[in-house]
Image (cartoon, helix red, strand yellow):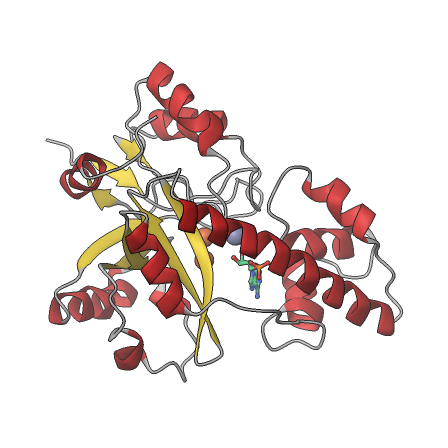
Length: 276
Ligand code: AMP
Ligand code: ZN
Ligand code: FE
Ligand code: FE
């Protein structure tokens, strides 16, 4: 018997992924996944079309998003599932992030200009289209303009959290993010704890009212995932898995490379406030 799996973490064209919701849903079926959540950065815009497509394609879909937050000045990504997509506080949070990102991106473009690299906001808007604009879009422009040989170099030399052109602007705390997810009737899951910097005080972070931990992530092996599964058990949190797929050219991990058992996916979907 094959285990029924759901991938609870991937990105579409509405943030920094390169697939449309239709392509993600079709790919999930091709890969024999039994469920999917599209978790774009700081936006739920994909769901304006995703539920209708999922229903047509016969793939169970769970409303989701991946919110940027900060805890003690460390960037923490928080996955939200089973949220009410019409929740005022949730939509306000998305709106705040759009404004925060715009200001932050302008600061980053100006920091790049100080280094003699001139990119305009217009170029960025053209690159991103209708998507939430993120650092990967700036990185793509740096590569396309011949300033860096690849995305990795763009992050190491200019845009990474510790690189000289990274800028912060009006961040939202992890605490407030979780509160808003709960107000929207959803559950809050700590995304890819594997990627948190070593100095993160994880026990303090887990004092916040998280519901789950994404202990199975991307291509990480069981040795890398195990400590997070154990930590989730110690804190009585549920465990999810997701690939963080951004499109074939952008991701190391394939859609479905990490997954959540279908019964947990289904339980979350049953409590969901948005099913299309
Ligand atoms: P943003 O949300 O605009 O701050 O951009 C964060 C996104 O940039 C992350 O979700 C990753 O997809 C990507 N990213 C961050 N750091 C790196 C890195 N060192 N190399 C490649 N991509 C990165
Ligand atoms: Zn991303
Ligand atoms: Fe993330
Ligand atoms: Fe992600």
